[in-house]
Length: 236
Image (cartoon, rainbow, N blue to C red; front, side, top):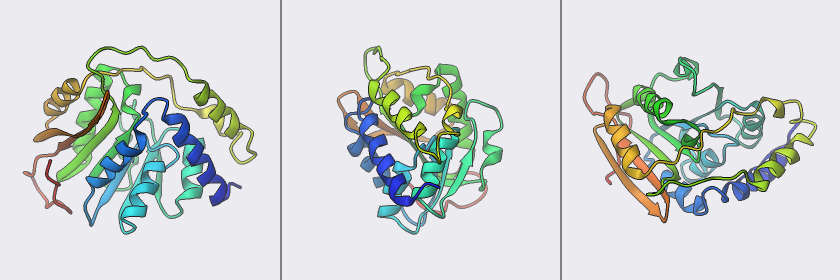
């Protein structure tokens, strides 16, 4: 069984290897958490080991958080480090993933260094689906590399070493073979995300944080329609 201490150590190693892909990762994570108000029901989309959810709960311990990911190994780490957090295993690339969620609506949907795994058309579809699970006036925010010019990515030794390391743990070795699928490595500019989110039906789209080729794009769902938002959307 994975202990909380082991899970936290694995999460720290996860953060270090992810900095290869998002060097200002800590700033980006903080920018995402800054967007969240209370009370809040939050969906951590493709939340992996739960490092973003942990930062959020450190800031807002009363938040109601769901972590969704496809990898059972990553979810096992999240479960050990974040007892009580709702965990969902679902494939964002498949239709019907929203049916696996424990709630019909969320005030915030956050994601970090994950949306580049989807090619253009699947990502446009995913943005529409995210819009459908947000409460009126709810906020979606995506932190990733969003360069103005095309980039070429190469596999990182840090990524392979991290997976090899957790595969050696008795509580995780049987789960590692069920990793997420291959990444599309799609890194369009901020303007592409803005246009795609507007086309998905979001009422307001902006960029509250940017460093070099890294950015957070935030989109607010329309306040119209049935129901009342559980929390107000923050200003740009």
